[in-house]
Image (cartoon, rainbow, N blue to C red):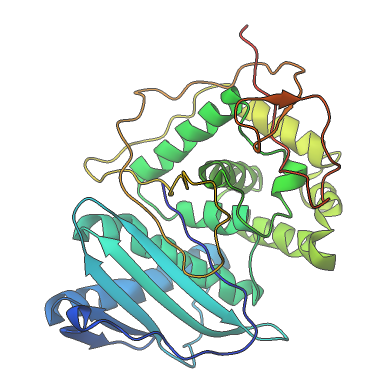
Length: 337
């Protein structure tokens, strides 16, 4: 799976220097300034980045983005055994992207098939909203640009998290501005919810346009418009109704085509439990083999919420959501049928 983080900063800062090892090959396109191990690779990734920029903008917006006023630095590092990407945005006080930087690392096929289109999708969403996008939607929407195996892996993991009681309740997930400690859940669940709402809205450009309008209304008032947005755009009786219907849609395994080759990726599990600082977004190495068939979500039982601060323990009560000591509320584990 993929993982990225970005800092919401107000003032413009100088671009980070590119290491000498990566500066051997350069290619300048209309919107990107690419650094790679050699000039051939730099040109290949520059052409691909421009292609994805057009493709993803048309998929999400129905039109191309205007030329950026400043080229986006794109650093390409070829690595074996680890794959990922990082994109950093600088937003202005009154909105708008002032600058953006991108770095990707991994083997060439995986970078071109998943990582680069994922990162480029972030730029499309940032351009559209001119501000930081809710974490679940930014990551979930960008996973839609990854290859079939990556999407399948996310779908499987979301079902596993729901059945294990690790999924975050939507009242907490929708307005979430920072990554939770269990970040892999946000990626898988964000992808699943994005896919569900886009399909519900008609799929394709129609479904994505409706989804973007929903996000825009939900982000109003500092992220306090989600209840109204859920009702007005999709006709649910509130966020809880959306949650119930989304989970119900997952009770049957989703048929997702898989592609040949290309390893899966997952976010850093952050084993130290330390709070992750804002800044450069990273993605990490390959997942082990996934189940041949994703498990359906079974009926949930009425168990206490999981408290992520005390691993594998459950509490009947916890601080009210939004208070400093309150962890993200997680959907309770399901019970066997």
